[in-house]
Image 1 (spheres, rainbow, N blue to C red):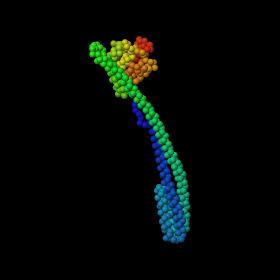
Image 2: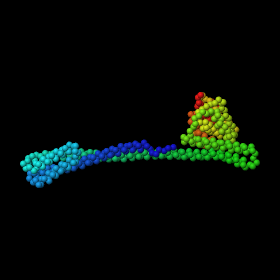
Image 3: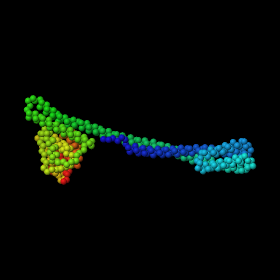
Image 4: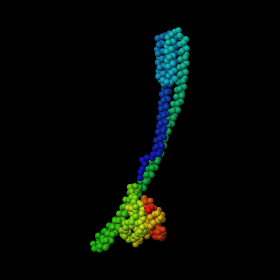
Length: 431
């Protein structure tokens, strides 16, 4: 099982929206700063224009009085104010060009102010300069009004963008946290289920291992407790020990195989398999356990060779698990029949026991890992043998099913309670 580190979609959406809003916020802030700087320049120009108006009037008055010494500083201050205003403007702008013309008029004004014979021209030039400065002051005032309106709008937009960023970020985080909380709850539930399955696995595995170990220990203790035991009795005890050891080995192999299959570490071979030989070998592997349980084992396989493609070792383990299961549910002196037949382009293996059968509601689940019906729990087991069989059969592109009674397709009865038939079908290799 893998757990995602964080819910990606809400975080990604929130991040993208926040980035877009931050970019908009930065653009609005830049426009606001530029507008503020422009307003500052216009304010300075307005002050300079007022100063220039006063300077021109003062120059005209002093020129009429003929006080050249007092006139000279005012002419210099007026020229400097024009240069200061030009410095506030872009060199390629029309306003800067107008300041160049004003500088030329300032030079002419200085020349006229020091010449008493040209008082008329001085008065005309002063009138022109005053009108121009007033017009310029009016334009600057209009620009300042427009800038004030623009800055108000930008300030409102800045507040809205900042608020939008905060709200969208909060909503994104809330959505991400909500999804993360749901995923954590889901993963916690999955972990709880896995932990429950793990506990169930260990409990059932311990019970499954304990039963044959207890039998082996009991047989050995009984044999050792009787110093006068005859060889036949000792051989019988050893047979029981060997049979339960084989059964225990089968169960350990099932557990390991199913664990590897769940982890994806089990790789099956792909080679030709003679099914008749495989079925006979699986039955031979179960004979010791069947003899210990006093159950007869009958194998019916045709003489002609039936070939499939796959892994003989794991497929034999799957058939052996089904036979072991049938022996476990068979009554004393009962018979388990293993029959190999051909059905069109498929090989069919039927394992039939004479037990009490399986409840109808339990039939679809007997191949699920850890599942056991009431009869299975009373007889012990992990519920993994049939799960392993299904996994191996499906890896060979086959199918497996179970039915109560005997399968009528191969000549058996089908009464519920007269046993259970597990059927495997595997595709044959075409000649």
